[in-house]
Length: 221
Image (cartoon, one colour):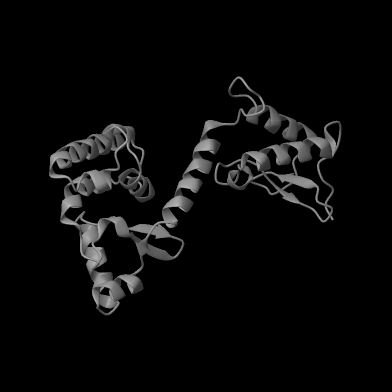
């Protein structure tokens, strides 16, 4: 069994830091942020490891990590690096989105009354033509259902709002979230719903174009 980080801070700091991040719901996102991660040994003690070497952190490294994580904001109890918070938020949003309806090739084939090959071809074609948002989740290709009718056909009223986001190569998860959640650019309206109203459709399209321009200019894809 490997000895956990010890010394003047010892297992107390290792434990306290891990417990703090667990309480904030951020522990699972450390690796994605490129930060040291921790695991529990057989006795439940936190062992922190360097993300590059996999070696256990020294006391000095652990103290530096603790200081860095608590260095932002006025309240050291909740001051953590913004990128880590953003990654955690994105993970929560993905879970929420996956809790809404979506299709796989197989379920889309059932909705359209077709064989699997037909929707597979159509999905690739429509995604290429910037008419359909497709999301990768593990080894699966998902088609968010909000952009389709009950019969599985493309929603014609949504295409003009969807096209600029796809043309800008906006991250598919972020595009899914923007289209299906209250949007600040629309005063809190949900784009995918607001676009159904002919009087609101142009406002939604302009908001989508504005967002797409921000993505291109900022390089946030």
